[in-house]
Length: 113
Image (cartoon, rainbow, N blue to C red; front, side, top):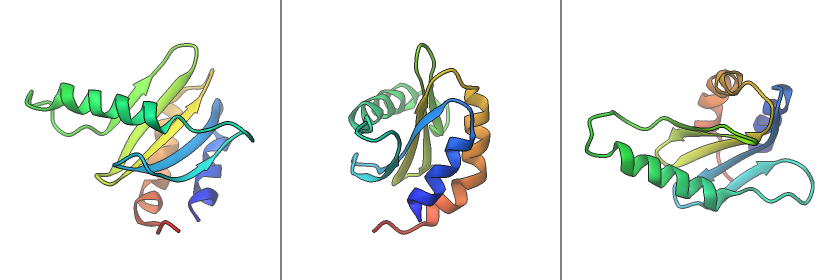
């Protein structure tokens, strides 16, 4: 079921890979090009750095991390224990977020296998 949900992101321009992992970096599901591994370690490092930056500064809870440049990455904290990451290029990252908003309830409640 997670893979079916993740394939929905390929309808959004620029998304090349969609990944879901837990708060410890354990890969739960990934959909992307054959032979291309998800960069979960990098995503965990970016999420930890963002959490460290917001902790103690009264910025509120961390919801997302956006990285833009030659390649785009969007990390979404679906629940405190489930994190989604979209990767790609030349897309409108705001549309990625909009797509994430539509499937967030399903991503949060779908059981891992």
